[in-house]
Image (cartoon, rainbow, N blue to C red):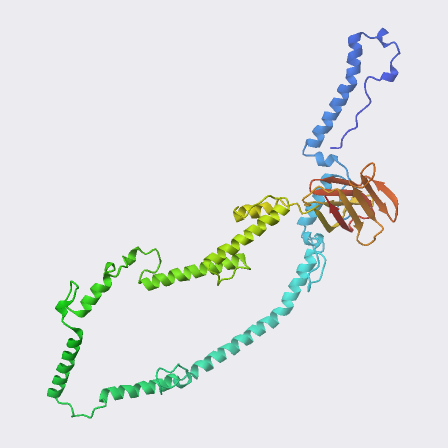
Length: 429
């Protein structure tokens, strides 16, 4: 419901006689004077109640905004909601929302860009399907032709012996010939008799045994065979001063060599990773002592540089502690710049609002991107008796006190003629 204006006060001072005490008692006079404040309090409470109600926005009027219906905040909010939810052709929510240009797509609104994208997809769908079918047909043909034409003579292979050839077909033929030679032997048939073969075997066995020695003289517990004796000796780590390999801290425990190789690989990888993370002058070929010395030199240099920048440091501090001190180095005044579109503030004026600066600005210059004559200046450091805070349009029509500043933000309004315009700005702390 609309807000009702407050009526005139019940008690009016101007209508009272000069000697008011002759007409009222002291208590009456006090009550009459208090009545004006009480009536004002009641009126203000009614206003606050109305604004806090669910219809509060309906009681607040506003200037007209282009494309938005209504004369109150409530009506304008409802108009924006209805426009965003609309599905009407040429008047849908997507038609209402604009977007930045996308290369290859036409349109300024979300709806127009989507329609352009659909047209692009539909226009290329047939050509894409044809291209995929062609690739599939060609691939199937190549695969079928390759499978049908595969032969052992067409498959390459590394030679397995002199004269074996370099294809599967050639090596199969060579292996067949070797089998034939092994089967027939190089000694003509009938030249070895059973008696000769038996004696030859005996002679070879006796010679082998004489080379091995007497098994009973072995120092192992198991003397039943040379193989068993060797296995017993191999399993006895204490006899070699090696110890139990199962207690090794390496992943690979199959042999001492394998464990040592694992240790070497891990140590080498550690040095390479160390050098890679730190960078020059460290290199992966440095010894561990060299890596340590170079790293300490870098820490010492960092500590010296930090001390020169006012952050007392020594090279014996941890690297993390030294790095954290970098954040405390004063690098000079903070500043920021950018281009921001001004809001339409009504009455042919714009409002520039910038946030996220990371500092409280003390000096600001804002200028209309299209015309350098529209400029706003703010300076708390300028050599004036008060803060410089002005906006000038076309070199004239100065407006004072257009800037408001805070921690991490500033705004400027009213900026005549700069509504919906890109504003170039520069700010320093």
